[in-house]
Length: 616
Image (cartoon, rainbow, N blue to C red; front, side, top):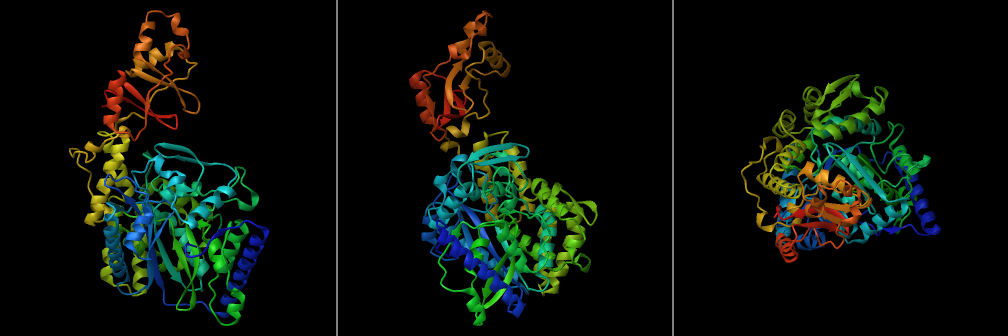
């Protein structure tokens, strides 16, 4: 889709023309299958590495255009978020030391990326969701400035009947109302491709679905979003909700999200998978079609199937079937989309080898897996893995088994068998699968991030804790050792951002507020109970109406009758406020100049925090 001149479908003629080419592509696909045109071998693997751009303070840096100009390499492209970049690696034959070769190529490209980033005083970070993201980083202004993503965002907004509601619940809870597709830009993945022959392709796709939960549990790396501790792999829920275009009532003809694990096993031919997607989801973009795919097949040529590719690019199953061509021959591959970026390139290649090995090492007893188990058990396994990571209990082969037991006793031996069956060198297989084994027995990315984030919050407010965590994540990545070898961060280390602190670093965001209709008696008691001296007055939309200090209410301590009066009577409405990104020096000057001990921190008049002289 990124290589096409994409436009929104606006007129009846646009829609008819697009659908005509889409249906022709399906007919051409069926014809190619019937004629045996698809490449049976060799098997190939490929990958897409996504990463984040950060500045010297390890905050997201929305300069993807400047980066792409500096790197000047077509392997790199922009993503939805203006601080995210994708690196597309060419496919390679699945044989010998191909995984080590892929690792070396990935490292070379990332070194090139680091040099390009450094020209703008930036760094690159590999992670599923950047820990230092703030709410201001996920607004529509940070969508990449390109026609491709503008069209996609507009199309999703127009197709969605209401504002997007994001509600994620883990240890913490995140509740957002959003008006763009930008939250999708929080997700950073390491997409893995495995080309397979047409024979048994559908059965192999079902196997990819069956193993997704256990595979994900060992690879989770995205437990934090906007300072909240949510799922072990929060990307799964976030991506699903951010691209959801359904009515609240869930229309009958579109009863699953565009981002989905699916609702059933696949049967029939690979063409039926594409037909099912076309039946469920309408496309909202089109392009210029210069050729007719049916005519090309009849003339012995391999068509590009542009309309089908375009439709396929607007739906996002976690295992996606993709059509492509190599050396003029059509092929099919499975794109694994659920594995997050990072924590290191070594971990990523290990994840890829593990997945490919298990895909190819499927025992005969699991042939026709769709006849052996209920799809809902497989789907439950996937979402439980996203929620709980290595703590998941999987329903596998008719019984419950821990992730550790399933991965170590069944999946790892299966992976060795699959890799050796296609001639992967024992040296490669043993090195990278040991990375998986050590991680299963030790620590994965999510666990490391959560444990250290909790520890850092004993010393820092959440915003600074997220910065320090991201800085240490970067340092660990640069050393290159897999995440299973990373230890806990040292408590005694000084924050590298002490001299660059802003209001957001020290303000209190967990603040007690009252309504203007609440009584003075209630305010007095809350202040005494919680040992606080300032309370903001807000309305139901969190808009700041006033401020009450201890000085305002202490005169009422001895007069119980007057305590029944409402807060509105005594609150100060001429409030001096400050932005959360202002410097601490600026906050101190405002307090000194006005002789006040606190400042309400607001964003578009909505209260986001409170900073007092004690915080300074």
